[in-house]
Length: 531
Image 1: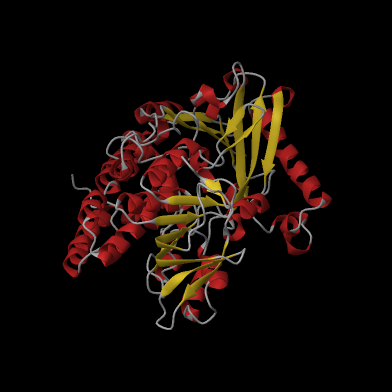
Image 2 (image 1 turned 90 degrees about the vertical axis):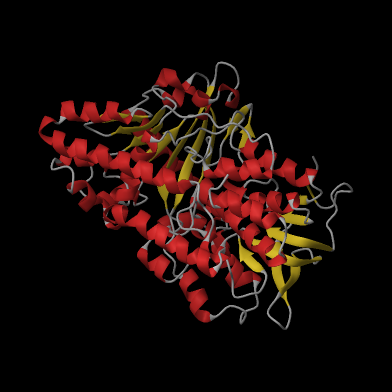
């Protein structure tokens, strides 16, 4: 498999192609693999030195680290990701089911959600006997929601590729589906929890989330066994599999190639791109699997996008970034109290917003051990963990960076201070001797995530599914420019692997439809959930 940076005699930068994709994250690579399979010469250009985006991963001294994966969903049998990847070809890396999913640990509680969620229901009922009725109702509603989500999760065709009749039928189906869950969708977390639980102590277990859907959906997915771990070798295994399919079908993934400008003609139709090095690549179609603000504000001519579209995108409510510690340990993490589950570590806060506010003393901390799930992620007898908490780009004057977000000593000192606070909290709550076992430590701030992805604010999930964003149509596939489509995380609300894969597949579907390509109907059936 030839995936390389230019110049390379085996993978030279072409002058033209059928489809050009900007960004080699999982969304861009999914689109590339689908279109390459359809026989279209597809070129994926990636500014970074390796493909994958947030699934790229990295290695240090024998340890492998997933960049930002807590868990996967829709990657098991019948899931939308699995269905789309099966359409691409055989051999999708297997993603094992998670049995221990979330551990909720605070100053006064310690509970674990597993693939048998009724165990947690019964434990909570024993510990809070006066809340038994509300607890039972919460888990009953979560089970029902899981069934409803399961019926829709594999139907991922976007409405923009449907016929008028198809749109009408889809709209009626969605209305029938959404009405029973509207009360969950519209409930802020405080109100949603209060509908079930009277005890503040009980509410505190789940109160670190931003929305009530973030509370009930994981329980719903636990009922339907919709939590998976990354495949053996880490999340980058998925990326390498997609790249292999692209290359096998005669298309290209070319690294270290930053798109400077998108070229359009007098009819407002794309014609190609101009690269930072001055080379032009002409193309009939372009999929932008990159940050939408970068696309509209920097890559396109100033007057090409209407001001109301730019304003909506520039004022979008985005998920924050995060601060991450990647630790290579000299021992098995289970000896320190870590398991395969995501540890959600919280403090008893008077203000719920503190959980996601970015203050290292008060924000929720999430700990994941890839090596507990997959021993191949660390040398024999050793282990690795990823510790992460919400963080914003603007923290402490943009992380004490200099002009142009340049990183100096003050930036490095602030990162070290932030990391020390996080390590103190994890040691105090779970693993008192954690520091003694650290062999490798890397840290990533929102500045780091911004540098490697160019995502606005270093966001890890893109635009939030808020009423404001949906009303102004922040996320979309079709752009004001003909034959230019959005095909990464910015095409959907919420982010994550399933939505990025969905975006890549749907942007490909729009191109196949425009070409009246024979593969259109086959892919449409996959995305519509038909066998």
